[in-house]
Amino acid sequence: MAETSRDLMNDIKSTGRQAVETGKSMYGDAKSEVKSQFNEAKSELKSEWGDRYETIKAKAQDAYETSEDWVKDHPLATVLGACAVGFVAGLIARRRN
Image (cartoon, rainbow, N blue to C red; front, side):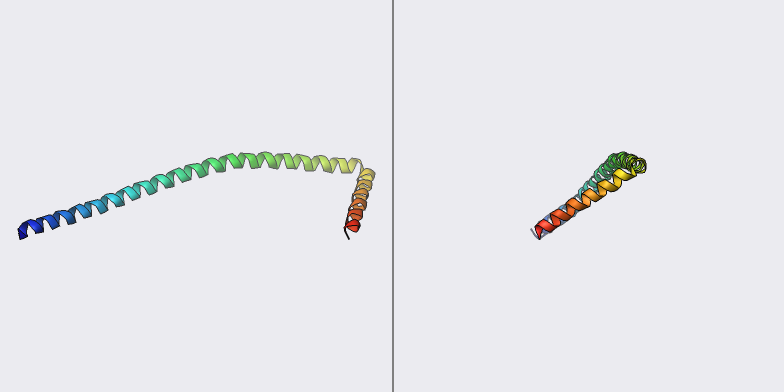
């Protein structure tokens, strides 16, 4: 009977070790899968946002150049417009106080 108990305990210990090893293996597999999916999603987002960044950058550069050309072509209108904006801003600030 004592020998049967020892065999049973050894089987339980062996099964426990196998369960731990299986758990470690499953954890490692899941970890690498999650890491792989994360890196793939990161790469896709970087590519998509990189393209959008370049598009926005080009549009901003065009707007800057267009406004710069307009200011050079119409200096008087630019100065008068700036004065008008300043005057209105002053009225609004004065009214709040």
